Image 1 (cartoon, helix red, strand yellow):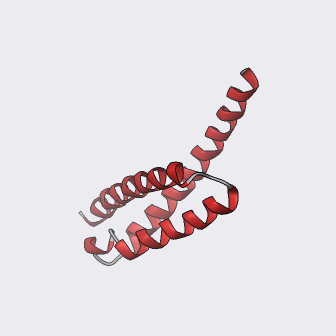
Image 2 (cartoon, rainbow, N blue to C red):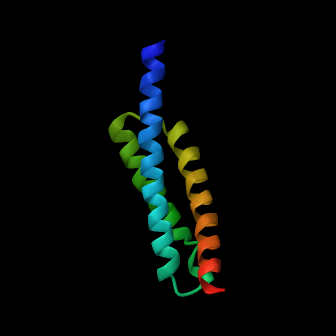
Length: 90
């Protein structure tokens, strides 16, 4: 069990680094988007979900795990991007 937990902890560290990198792209998007209405893009949300579903299938990741994780990740990233957009315009 110790080895399993160590493996999970290692992956969590990797995920944190990747999510921080993703957050950097949210910072860039907030700077680039011309208006607040552009922050939430339903077409892009659907595209990301389709991309993730294809990758999940390729890697044997259950869509029952992947879909809610990515939906929540995107919602949190959108909320973060709104806050950055607002902070850089006031």
